[in-house]
Length: 123
Image 1 (tube, one colour):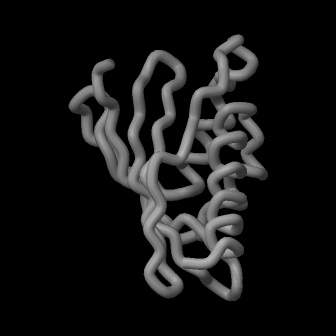
Image 2 (cartoon, helix red, strand yellow):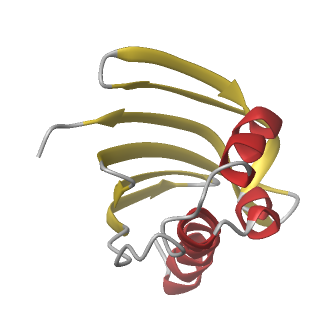
Image 3 (tube, rainbow, N blue to C red):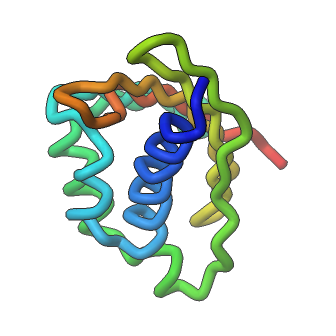
């Protein structure tokens, strides 16, 4: 795995994290492939959305930054095989303790999130 690949994936993750944290939906949307699907559970309740519905939800809430939360999102692991990668991330925010498993693919020369699988874990 080369340094440029890791840097490119980290740039996608930065757009993902700061898009969520600041409520910058254009930045957040740039991290996703348009056909990505988001699956997970929030305190046991199933969650399934496509990218437009997810972006709409982020746009309609008060961002963590505006609420005075300290930025604490981070990548905890990256594994790359060819043009595919899996990123594990921790996103503590809005009273939740989220962990994400994000599948990324290099599409038309750019890394994009193609699937988000996540859960909330009690701290």
